[in-house]
Each structure stands twice: as C-alpha cells, then as structure tokens.
Image (tube, rainbow, N blue to C red):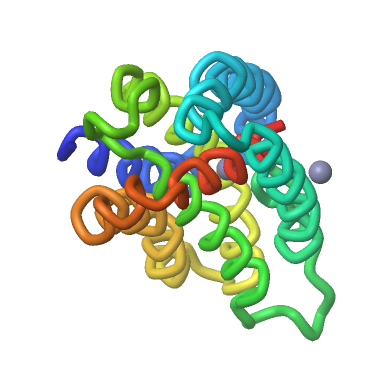
Length: 210
Ligand SMILES: [Zn+2]
Ligand SMILES: [Zn+2]
C-alpha cells in the first residue's frame, strides 16, 4: 500500500519538478507519446478489469453499472470544461488579469478528478479484479497524472511568476489520489464494498477513462 501512495505522490511531484529543469520545447516532445500511452493503457485496464469487476459486484443490476459509466463519461466532460483540459496536458495562456492568481476552479476540478481515481484503488478481498491487478491499475493512474502535473506546473509558473510558489499547489494535486486511496481502504472500506457503492464508483471512474 505504501508503494502505491509513494508512487502516486512521487510521479506528480517528480513530473512537476521536471518543468523547473527541462526547457518547455523538450517537455512537449515526449509529452504527446506519454499521453497517448497512458490513455491507451488506462483504456485497456478499464475494459479488462474495472468494468468486469463493477459488473461482477452488481450481478443483479448490470444496467445500473451502465448508467454509472455514462454518468462518469459526462461528468468527465464537465470537469474538463472546468479544468480547461489540463488532465491531458492543455495549457491555456493566461490573460493579463489572471497573472498572479491561482486558478482555483481548475485546481478544484483536477483534485476532484484525482480523488475519484484514488478512491477506486482498493486492495481487499471484496474488490476482486481491482485487488488482483492493484499495482497495474495504480501504475496506470500514476502515469496518466504525469502529463497533468507537467501542464499544471507549467501553467502555475506562468501565472505565479516563480517556481517556488508552484510547489504548494502541485502538492495539493499530488496528495489528492493518495487521500482517496487511504479513505477507501481504511476509512469507509466496509460501507463501500457492502452497499454497491464501490460498483457504482468503479463504473463512474471507468466512464471517466473512456
Ligand atoms: Zn483537450
Ligand atoms: Zn485522470
């Protein structure tokens, strides 16, 4: 479990730190293949592990899982409006009046997205496929946070002027998934698995990955 928490935190902080040392032109060069790979990898995990597990957990109401997948898909579209597509590496130039301000709405959308992703990472007998492929899924989520962390660090440096002021906000993003993971595994595990909420959550997050 500690490995998962460390990996999720370190990838975001590490990718953010890269922005401080690597020139932007080089970053965009490897960001595209990274984005394509992490998207494809997550899609594969969604089809082979997340959706089958959600359906296994709710064998009586498979169509309900379908509704949650749809809700996740459209929920992600909404989050992307708020986050301006930063999850997949978009950095929009800031207007003069935005200089010096932290884009709180964007950050909130990214944190919600990341919290949800962390919350499905459950390692327990009750989470079947997810538990058996726990580290493969953790890796998928961690990898796909790299382009987002690079975009966030780039955007915040542009807005805030110095890299030193970027760290606290990058830290907020870095901790979102681990907090979701800890909450699901240690605080609400029984309620989550016993009530069908976990199946709904899995369906929803699977929808965001489509
Ligand atoms: Zn986009
Ligand atoms: Zn994501």
